[in-house]
Length: 533
Image 1 (cartoon, rainbow, N blue to C red):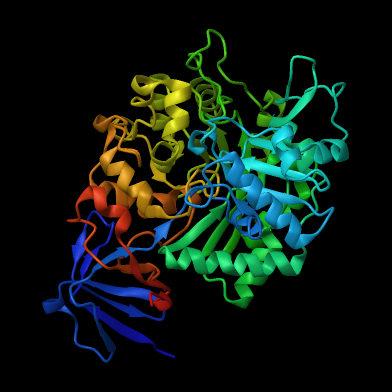
Image 2 (cartoon, rainbow, N blue to C red):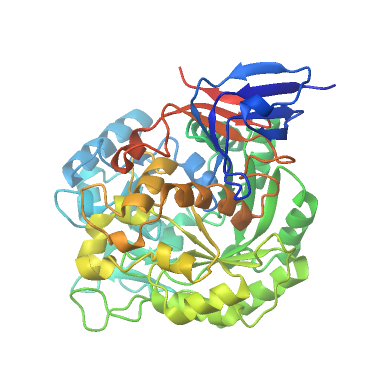
């Protein structure tokens, strides 16, 4: 049955270089049939929606987020402003949750950023014990690479002064060798592996709620870059999709957890390759975070002569992941923030020829904080995609100043330079692994990309700012390419009618006010999935 509608009299930015601006478009059966000026609209029988001059963009595409983790965090304490500004306020929230749910149940929190706390330090077991000493507590730092736990959680995990640091991880200790409740990188798994998971019903409902959140933010396609606790969210997304979850989703499996069951992942990839919910490939962690001082740098962190972070991936694991992705014609995604980690991954992957279809990058490097010129050149030559997050510097400026210093941080995330060198690049949020109250919101990312100014006004290197058109394309067209989404990210004939309507023109808005723009309507396949009330 034919379903045709014309959207007329708008200011449409298409992300299509051959036809960047239009006024009207015709949508038929969920696909774009025509795009152009209102005066040139073809004669036909269709319903009409008058956009009344409002700004229209392709739907945002988040090429690197953890949608499953966002769902899991429902019911947890958000350790971020404007709710929490100090350890004392977090302690009050812990006590409140303990009263509500009773003794013995896990108390969890996410988004902790010591740079935003009055005390300017990580919370430890002794702080948490004062808040609650009869139930286990696990608070995840904003980067998701550090977990802070109380004595009950340490005891349940069997962690004491005799517990060795695991490969690729560290247990912080006091001067007497006693664990202080701060677990870095792979050491987190000692506790995360014993935390009870949500029931299937709870997770399904939480995923549906995440879909509604994304729709309200204009996000029409997104990713689940894997659970740092080794969970598989595929079934939850499939069930949520049947119940009304509308976004296209690309899921990635963290190889640390699934390397011993390659047939399982291969089956997921084969059965979902052409589905709206698809298993896109593998994810590896090559290092940690800048804010946690675990990203593997070539220059020591500020205040140290030798602390350059750490690698957290073995050569054997990397080689096995490459072999799997080549055999299964799927993507390899590698988290690498520090210079050494980025160069190591790009050099190794750059020895390979592409194993995926031409429109899908065979390899992605995530975050890319301080890339060397050598790494940039290899990525440009080999077509390795870089997926970065403007909101890191925007929202976590305190940690970057503390760990890198103001002059060094201005050279990080060199977006303009990488584009000039021919690197394929895309934007995303890494939600919820960043210190922002609503971490999946694309607009603070775009604001930072065009201003290079942090939320507190800090100049983060304006030479690396890009124009607004480029920023939007990096969040739509090129993000679609990064995650292998076909026929989305542009408003052009033959593409899915995934688009958003804004309350003001982002192309002419004062850059400093971009984060105040509101999404009025979100459409997926030509159908309204969100209308702002």
